[in-house]
Length: 110
Image 1 (tube, rainbow, N blue to C red):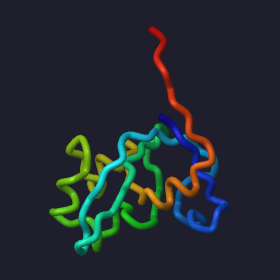
Image 2: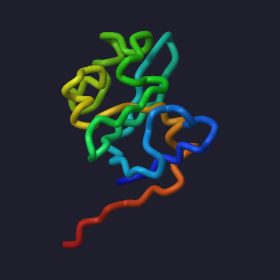
Image 3: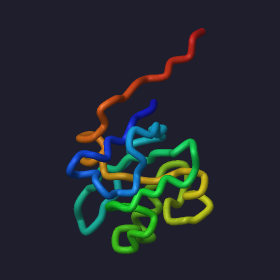
Image 4: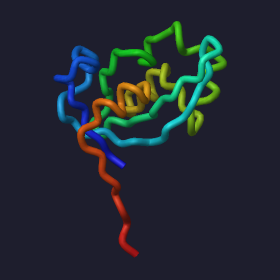
């Protein structure tokens, strides 16, 4: 699945994503942080380093702990530079779902 970032919205303005750039939806997942269940989305920027700077970005050392990192799908570490340079990053579902104007399913024909 793919999505677009609409960075002119109030909740994504200044978050570092490129306006209307395509992103691959890898997987939604849940972590527990401060006894609260957080719903997150693992995304990938096909062009490489996404530049995302909001909550749960790779530099968010408050939220990314050993406990929350173990719940990231595919054993990816979104705080790792190599992972980031491959385009992987995480956003909260609340920001993703609210701001994703276009989501499409890519189907393979059999």
